[in-house]
Image (cartoon, rainbow, N blue to C red; front, side, top):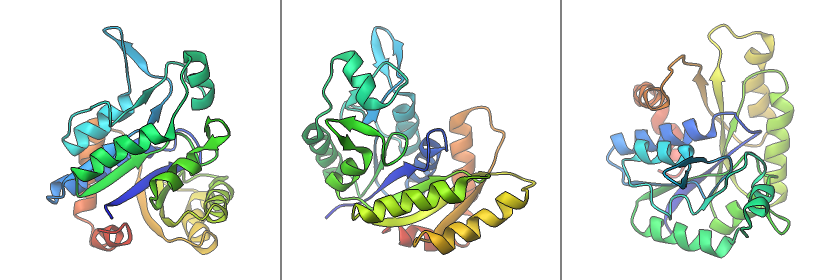
Length: 238
């Protein structure tokens, strides 16, 4: 079976795409043929009469691959939950189509990184959720969490929901950690590691890079120099 990870978040806008892209860039730097996938993107922009997923483009730039239809099979216009965006566009999201795209990509790569949309309970189609898609692809989860007040509750709930749905949580990344953390930020990683039933695999610092690709490249270089990165990659199945 091909190796891979499904990136989910405790909420929208927690940095899933950046975390996924950084990991893709890191694996590429280490000579691993990594494939990426963003199965469903809502809020796509239009360019030359076509919808474009900026998330998928960043993943592909990081991995050094072409942004094909398999990488981003569903592009939706409105910036709302995918089920609602698909309804507005007159599209039905088909899990079997996503699975076929995933299998083609997985057959051509050593490791797959799949990024979800929002959190595990985000609806996709017909009562099916992001969590159901992760289970369909049979991938363990990497949960991306924010560092500030409220993150313990959100992260524990996400991991609990995953376990109830028989999804393996490989670990948690606390993303965008401030340079001068307050009490809430200082205590959150320990509490998350104690309560989630999954290890905290990283506390990634906030950076002020304006360009997302520069941010991804800088973070990948930073991770490559960390002694614990090899341990983290082993936890992810590498």
